[in-house]
Structure formats: structure tokens, C-alpha cells
Length: 370
Image 1 (cartoon, helix red, strand yellow):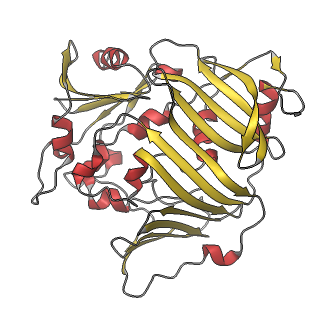
Image 2 (cartoon, rainbow, N blue to C red; image 1 turned 120 degrees about the horizontal axis):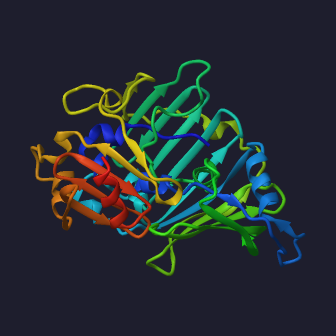
């Protein structure tokens, strides 16, 4: 399922560098297949880790709909101080528990609705059209993707995986010897029997203790993904179906007409984030990866205006949030540390950011190498 947009970060550009959790979650990758088979219980046929990985990677995208619950305890500071993270804003997925309704026809059409008590945030992909509807502000963002391009929005503003499939893709994008993979048992998700596939880091220095994927016994689809921290007992990130249906949704689900009175903004398919000087983010210094597997660290340049409070209103800025973080220093320089449950990030005083699913010590080593 592909969805997203850049509308929230277009309206609040400083927030982009205040929420490094996405980069930390992207490090949930790198696996090595265990050789020993483990028998599953609950009456399911025994399967090896290798067989389950084959099931996951070979499963054809198919129709799916249902209700997804996301719980996040990433150790982030209170993002509500930024004044833009409302109950249905995508940034809200970075903490707390949230409910989404999802639909996909397995092809070019998909929809995700982020629900709250009095409002909702909808993302609808219908062929080449991408619609983003925020009921709290009565605004609509519309993108028309070029013919022949992948059916997805220009960039994902909901940086946290919104479905078990998205989370599983992050985990399975890179397979290498840094992880031990095993079948840890079986269970039930959304009333369906599942195998539980555990991924455990072989490396020291990562904040991730293990990732558990619940794989549907019939379809091979991931129905739940949990990431456990080395510093907490409960899952620090948990995304899973509470109800699921593998029949094709009605085409009307993917039809979208802006509500009467909504403020509609039309975007070019090439729209994207810009630097403070008006240039493209892509034209600036490119991020680099230091290390491998679970101890990979992303080191990137932070635009100077992201570190300075240029706001003209009373809302706190990302710069305020950064300055509230603890100070750290070393041979690499000085800066501010965000020490989360699944990741750490350092924003240096000289305009660099290092982030990864690692301890602060690993970040400092990576910065010293740059």
C-alpha cells in the first residue's frame, strides 16, 4: 500500500528535523535466515524461518481491508508543543495508541483513514490521483502522479509505518548476517492463525531487542509487527490488524470528492521539501550511512533555518524542542541528544544530525568518523 504526501511538513517545515524517529525505524532491516526449523503450536504445520521468509517475500499484493491499531512509545518529547500535532495529524502516530481504517484493492487504489473522536485525516490513492483530507482544518491536498509512475504520493508524511505490510517491508528490505531469524511459535491476530517470526540482532550497540512479525498462516501476509526495545519490557512500536478482510473493497471506497467549502490545494507531482534558501533538499549535501545492519547510523546535514526559531507566532518551534534536549559533547563536537526507546539522535551545533536504532555512544562514534 502506498500513500502519503508532504502537506503537513510544507505547512510546518521546521518539524521535519524535530521528528527523527522515522530514520530510526528505517534501520529495522538486515536479516539472516536461521537454519534450524521450529515447530509451531496451535495445530499449524511446522515451518522453518526460511519458509516463512519465502512466504513473506513471495506473497503477491492482494486486496485487503480492515482496522489497524498502532501503539508507539518511542521516548519522544511532547510534540504537541509545536502547535501542529493535532489528534488526527500524522505526527500523532509517533506516540500513544491510534486506530486506522485501511483499504487496498491490491493494485492502484488504496485508502488510509486516521480516526479520532471528532475528526479524521484521510489519504486516498485512486489511480494517479492522491488526495489528502484533514477534517480538522477542512483542507484538501491533491496530487496527480505522472502516467506510468508508481502509484504513490511524492513523499510519505506519515513516517511511522501505518500497516503491518509497511512495517514488514522495512524489516525485509535488506537481508544480511546481522540478524538471527527464528520461528518463535504461533498465535492469533484478528481471529486468524499466525506464525510468529522473531528477528534478533547479532550486534551490540542497538536499542532494538527483537522484532516479531505475525505471519498469516493461509496467505503469508504480515498481520502484526512488534518492535521491542532493549530498555523497556512492552513493545515500543506495535502495528497490527484488529479486523481484516481479504476480499476486494468496493470501488466507491477509493472515490473522493472534496467536501463543500473545503480549501483545495493542487500540487505538482514533483512538489517536495525545500531548503531554507529555497533550493531543493536533494541538491544539498547528501546523507551518508555509517556502519551496517542494526547499528547503521544515518548522518545528514540539517538546514540552518531548522536550528533557529524564525516563527512569528506564539507556537513553539522545532528549535525550541531541540534546545530543550540534554547537551552532549565529545571529539566530534557538541549538540543535543534525543535518547529514545528504539533509536537515538544527536543534532550537532554545527548543523549535522546522526540518527539510528542505536545507543548514543554509537552515534558519537559515527559523528567522529565524518
